[in-house]
Amino acid sequence: MLTMDDIIRDGHPSLREVAKEVQLPASDEDIEILASMLEYVKNSQNAEKVKKYGLRPGIGLAAPQINVLKRMIAIHLNDEKGETHSYALFNPKVASHSVEKAYLTSGEGCLSVDESIPGFVPRYARVTVKGFDIEGKEVKLRLKGLLSIVFQHEIDHLNGIMFYDHINKKDPFSVPENAIGIER
Image (cartoon, rainbow, N blue to C red; front, top):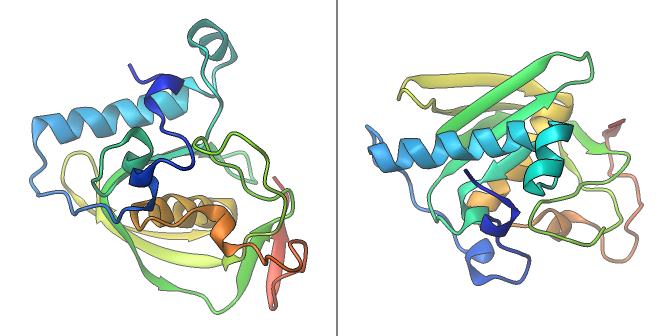
């Protein structure tokens, strides 16, 4: 089982590397890693398990964050409507996106970043993501709102990009042009 000790912190060189494609069909080892990533994210949202295992709550995790430089992400969250979404994907990529932008009004956080970094992170309001699920089946997801933002955050990790790289350094709370604010 993954714990907070498995998550590398900001400043670790792996967080700035571009992750490699996962060879498909995925190896048993890659399937096991991806499944454990999803298990961590789910467990981190369970108050009992957070206390028992000393987990920090999160809604997404990318393989580079556990020092595995492969294109794998796990996401588990309840969206604005209270619907639960759970994904574990190999080789996810943004296939298309809206012109309209979105940002979380509370800003973004990251399991690899211990301190709070204030500011708005401009993202695309809607994205279409393609990838492969844990069984190796191709998936195409049309996402909007919080789910779209979380996918973009995790896919950024696969490209060595941190959320704060997107924050306007001169004016962190300037509202991105043509953007909708999303409450979290």
